[in-house]
Length: 113
Figure (cartoon, rainbow, N blue to C red):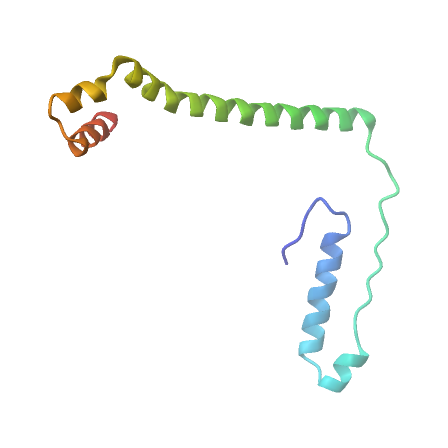
């Protein structure tokens, strides 16, 4: 059974649905309409500690910032080569010299590998 662990009542509700399905599959059509499993789920009466909630929020913010910085650095590292090539006009110089586009990209691929 797939369930969302964030919802407090999702796991018992899905398990109840699965058990009802298994029960009704193994019964006759007449009996399946008359029988079923009823589940009662009550919320947890306790509350989360304020300190624990604050720590959890800070960890979530740190994870979000880490992912954001990782994507920023990765994207910037791909763009630096293109900008440097545009400034030095290396591709244009090779094109004027008679090197074809295919040769240019194969050479770049081999160099990168």
